[in-house]
Length: 542
Image (tube, rainbow, N blue to C red; front, side, top):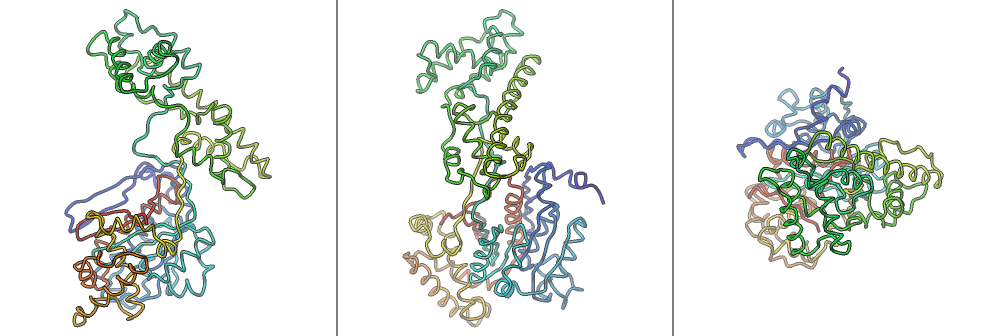
């Protein structure tokens, strides 16, 4: 057996998450970077899958390939001939055998480092009779559950703080939803975020370094290789001295500031000054912390006690730092982007930023140790490595909170929901959201899904419409907003679980599972709806 670090070396950098196959005629791959710490979290995680049809099997396949620690497959049915057409993890020899056992064996072949076991029991019965079963897992992935079982499972997982992902494919439609009380993300890794250069608020060491460089030098090599950070620090100081200590704020002032930078150009090919002009807006960034970060540090949970999670202990230390050593600012990240510069200037600049980041880290570490001691915990309960990661990502912290699914169903945000129903771009997704609930009620009443028998298609369409309109009426919405064509299509699906749709939904569900387990990237908030008719994916927040 290879060492885990070597075995998963490729995905320590990037991993295949979604692979759309067959009828899209193209392959779309998405890579997530989660690093060694994220891989370790995956290897320690324990996942329970409820129902191992195509949707569940595809979800778990991605996680097994990613190196998840252990899996438990719960399924009470046997493999039937129809399963061979939509589930790649069973074959002709599997017919008549336990579906959970066959799928589990196939998944084990994909990665022998993953611990795999199965439970031959109906997920619905397990939810009803043995709710404590789920407390042993890091994450539960429930696929193809009817609404009544889904709501019960959600309450069970909430009570034991177990992360839950609900996934469902139904004909050409599907959805994915996350449910847990709170998910705190340190490494949110946003696609676009400004470099933390503090050009709006340079500290003394950075100012002193800038003072050693003469922007009016006649040496053309030095002039065109002075880092843009130094250029902006010096020009901003020059501007402030002439404007009462203020940075450019209005559109006219920002244009004037750029013109001042342009006036310093000695030649057209001075890339460093062009970089300074492009980054000039950074000197106008207001001091202090963002509104999002302010909401986190002022959250009631930042008042910590012995039961507080590590995240909120770190936030409490961050709050103290901002109010004291940080002088209103979060800790410096410590990295700088590539830029046109003499090598010695760039290296010196790097060291200045790293030294400031290290000093900020030490200050926060000291406060973390004091807070832990104060609340009666081991002062070293939070590792130095975790504190350093927190400091490096302090500006990008994210807290996700999710409503209980039952609350969402009974009391959706009506203005938003009604907007979705009447919006041309979202109406189909909103229709699927309602109809996926309606088919479950239909199944509860008639013990089958609508459209299962061709001879009853017209009658089933009428029945499904009545149920769907009733759901909307209970919510205070107009049932006429539902498309007749969409109701007919939903019946035409006949409860089918198509492999192509299941593979897509499974890819989305596994991607969100990795986000939750690694505590990296921000998981979706709301209900993800896939509309295979129009090839559209949309997120509804209701």
